[in-house]
Length: 386
Image 1: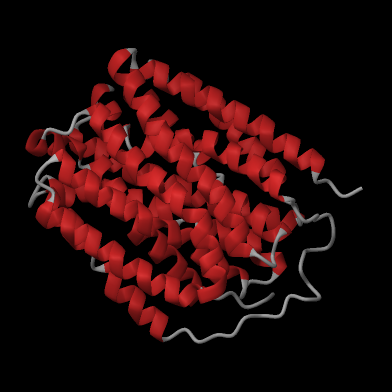
Image 2: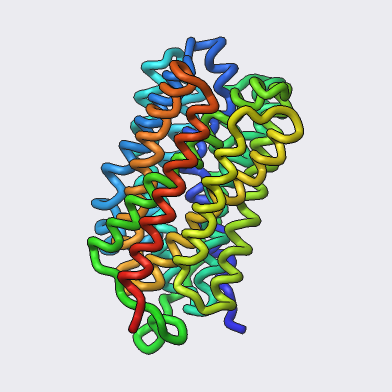
């Protein structure tokens, strides 16, 4: 069994978590922000969209920059500015406008995080362990919602929401400490670029098609990370209970990503079947969420976290495994799709919640997941090795 680069994995998780915390903490502390600065549900969708649409614009260009400057420099820049954004929100977000400006700045920085983390791992992980490692790496974002959910009862409802943002910035020195102790050289994959066959390099249109599927599937993540706390309160949970549901749902997502990666490695699979399967099952779960309350709502939400948001690790694995020569640039394309979905999703779903019903938003997510599953199966068929 090959040695796993655990320190680099920890760095990758932390950098993604730190840079995504500004937007997920806004979602988790929405009720406090509503009372203090007048943020509405539609406004929450809009500021979340600004963050991810900005990241969508910067991700692909920054992916090419990362290939030139390296992942270490990218991590330093990203962590410093992400911490600055968190502290700035804690100190200076006095209106929806000031919060929006800071989230736009955070989104621009966030475009660095995932492509840089993918490159850091791709250059040190053997092919037969990539599924597991990218599944673990993609624990970064649910770790953000995990922290955000836990921050509601422990910080936001006790000492105030601003302390939650300031406390999150403490990840910055930890990242720089781990960076200083990592000096491993890249592995030469010239003779082992893919597992035991069955992997075909993906063309730009094929990667772009997967990016489209990712954009649609990301609506599930948006509905869970941004609107869950308010939805859980509507479904008869307390505000603290809603935050804990976000916490445990994030744990479920982390577990699913790790298990899906392990299964993919053991089967020496390309990743498409797992991707399409999770999206398809997630579609059924979100249909069932419409009208659910109480314990039934809690159980379905946990299942929605597992399926509707359990696929990103497999998405990165699929793209990087096929295009190992350009991991940052290639994965930045699918990451752009995720960011587009995360940018458009809050606007559409927030409008549906305010003007139609919350059940309509769950149904819309279900349709998006189904279409994403169909697109993924189409790309899988087109890239199958004869």
